[in-house]
Structure formats: C-alpha cells, structure tokens
Length: 485
Ligand SMILES: Cc1cc2nc3c(=O)[nH]c(=O)nc-3n(C[C@H](O)[C@H](O)[C@H](O)COP(=O)(O)OP(=O)(O)OC[C@H]3O[C@@H](n4cnc5c(N)ncnc54)[C@H](O)[C@@H]3O)c2cc1C
Image 1: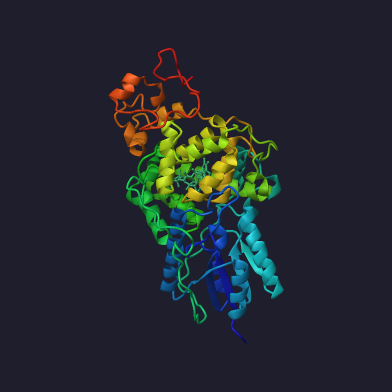
Image 2: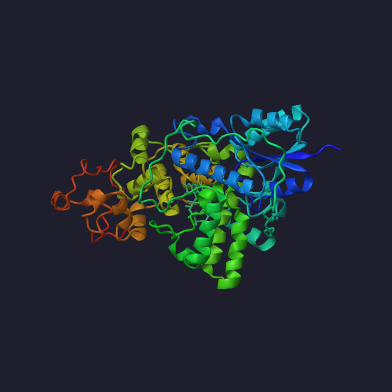
C-alpha cells in the first residue's frame, strides 16, 4: 500500500506547540508536508491607498516563518516556502507530492475565508478535501454555551456565560518528530525587497524589539510570567505607556499564531498554582477573552464590521476637510500631544499601547470626524499585531457602529493624557521638542500664551503643530474648570 501524505497549510498558526494540525497529520499520515505561502494579496495597496502589510509586520512575518522552518527542521521536518497565490500553489504541491488531504486552521474574516474557499474549490477539482481546524481562540465554537448565531452581542453577557458554562481544552503536545517526504525544492525565504518593501529602521524608543517566531514568543512568556514576575501586577500596569513590561506584548505573536492563546491560558493557570491567583492573573485572561469575542462576532456577522455604517446602517458624520485632517492624524501633526505622540510611536515602531489606540481612534472619529474605516485601514498597514477581527472589531466599537453600539465611546483625550501620562514622560519621549514645558501643561500647549511658549522654546506651527481643530476641551489649569467631572 502506498504511503499517505497530508499537506499542512500554515497560515496564522506559525508554531509547533499546541498545533492540532501537526499533531493530527502526524497521527493520521505516514508523511506530513508543511507549506507556507507568502501570498502577494497581503502585500498589495488597499482601496484606502494604504498597504495591507507594512514593513515592520512583514519583517516580523518573515522572521516567524523562518523560525517555524528552523523548528520543523529540528524535528527532522521541513517547511516548503513559496511566494504566490495559495489557490495555485497548494493544489500544485498536493499533486506533486500525491497528498491525500490538506489541513488548515479556519479563519474568520472575509478576505481570509475567501482565500480558503478558493483553495478548497481548487482542491475539489483534483478530488481533495480541505479539512478545517479551530485553533485561534481559547474556546472551540462547539464548547460555547450557545450556537454562533446566538452569541450575545454584549461582551459582558458573552463573558459571564462563557466563564460559567465553558471550559478550555488542554493543549496539544509538541510533536517529537515530523516525518516528511523527500523534498527537492523547499524554497527560499523572500526578502522584504522581493515583497515590495524596505527594511524598517528600528527606533531605540520602541517598547521592545519584537522578533518574530514561536521561540521568541515562548521566551517572552517565560520572561513576563516567570522571570520579571510582571503578571502579578498586570491589572495595575496595563494602561501604562512606556516600557516592555507594563503589559504582556504577546499580541504580535498571537496574531500570527507563534503563540497559542490556549498555551497562555494554561501557563497562567500554572502560575496561579505556583505563585498565586489574583486580579491580575484573571485580568490577562479577561483581556484575551476580548480577542475571542471579536473573532466570534466576525463569525456571526461576517462583513458588517468593514462597513462605515457598521451595524447601525449609517456612518458617523464626517468633516468636509476630512482628507486633510486624516493626513495630519496619520503623521502625528494634530497639535494634541497625546495623540501625536501615540501616532509617532506607531509610525516609528509598529506598536501602540491599548490606551493609545483607544484615544487616537476616538479622536479621529469623534473629534476630527474622519471616516473611521480610514483609521482602521491605516492601523492594518502599520500594526505589528494586526489581526482583522481585533482591529476592525475594536475600531467599529470605538466608532459606536459595532455590534454593541450602546454606549458613547468618546474619550476626552486631554483628561486621558492627564490621567495616564501625568508627568508627560510619554509625550516628551515622542515629542522631545516639548521637553521644557512643565508636566501640567505639556498635554495642552495650545493653552500657553506667547510668553510661556517663548520661555519653553516652543513656537507653535514651527517646532510643534498648532491645533488643527478648535479646542474642544477646557483648560485643565483654569481654576474654574474640572475636566474630570
Ligand atoms: C482601535 C484598536 C485597534 C486594535 N487593533 C488590534 C489588532 O489589530 N490586533 C490586536 O491583537 N489587538 C488590537 N487591539 C487590542 C489591543 O490594543 C492590543 O491587543 C494590545 O494593546 C496589545 O498589547 P499587549 O499584547 O501588551 O496587550 P495585553 O494588555 O497584555 O493583553 C493581552 C492580550 O489580550 C488581547 N487583547 C487585549 N485587549 C484587547 C482588545 N481590546 N481586543 C482584542 N484583544 C485584546 C491581545 O491578544 C493581547 O495580546 C486594538 C485596540 C484598539 C482600541
């Protein structure tokens, strides 16, 4: 009898730990053929004029695929790497290696599921089956206490039911060896240049140097949980803005699956056993549940999340000069230091804190009145951790057009800056031209008079932009004003 080969099509699951595809393929087949495609679709320009993938994320992806290849090779395996359309490459390799079946992890967003649908149709033509696995979330959809169509639209309701009624499955063992067929041409890793991109320049102010790959992801988890012991205080520090350890920084690795969220869950449980459970250990799981929630919402509602009107059916109002305002926002030139500092961090590093993201998104939509989908598309290009459901879901939520549009998600960005950057350290890191302005005034240089500006060596419109919209906020230093009311 001839040998059975299963092709494992890697996508956003670039790991060998807790990877059901690999475990199952090894169990069911004599030989396993691991494949990754750099799909040119992901390196195109979008309808918004942004790139689908910017250079920080592209470099991270190349590192991640390269590390997967190394890790597979350590187990006696290999990774076939191709650049091209998976719809052609996967069936062609399937024929060449006479595979019996193709495995992949199911995605949720429209473009990703369309790609798998096309691959599935192409495989059908050669009488092969594409088997779908679930591996991106804490919970399997089968383990939820409701069918996808009945998942509560309100996060808190979803969370409470899931926490009460569902359990998270154990992780799959990392395979000890991977039997691959004789592979003639495993393929070269593409360079950034071949993907149409340039090498990003690393900024020393970055919260950390992110290197792609599951080896780095597991080291990061080891560091954050065990070595620095910062999980213990996660809930207290998670809204900070500077440094590697105020939050987990797992997101870039989670987005391409270098880290399994289930692995994170069980590592938190081990931490709780060994070092004790507290609000912080729970809160990391709580935040990760948001990730599950947005993925399930995408499964439930499909394309609604990409429309300017979202679920409301009508988009928020936009300013007549939104093009100009959007350009200023993108480049960190709005004249609001907290917004500009965050946008400059994103542009220079590919990362922005969760607090920063909430504020720049709210500011774009509610203060500048720019179509929120433009902001989401810009994040798609720039973010190291871009993930369709987390990005578009959060943007729709902040814009108030998401599946749960109950509350007004307006952030008073001056109040936020005063609360979360009280000494102005974050602003001054990204806007050093404001370093002479005292902490109490650095969030609002537009309220300084000429004499004060001159004393602090700042000329608005020269060293730092003047405000691009009339101030919507009262001066926090005005004795009659309480912006915290
Ligand atoms: C407008 C906007 C766009 C965003 N786009 C993305 C995106 O494309 N990809 C992405 O991973 N996250 C996105 N987020 C969520 C969140 O900002 C990041 O996950 C977080 O800042 C990553 O840093 P961390 O890993 O240190 O997070 P931690 O605070 O350590 O949280 C742990 C993990 O929980 C998950 N998580 C935390 N908050 C959220 C949230 N609000 N929604 C979904 N998952 C969450 C992430 O996987 C994160 O890695 C977005 C948030 C906003 C407001």
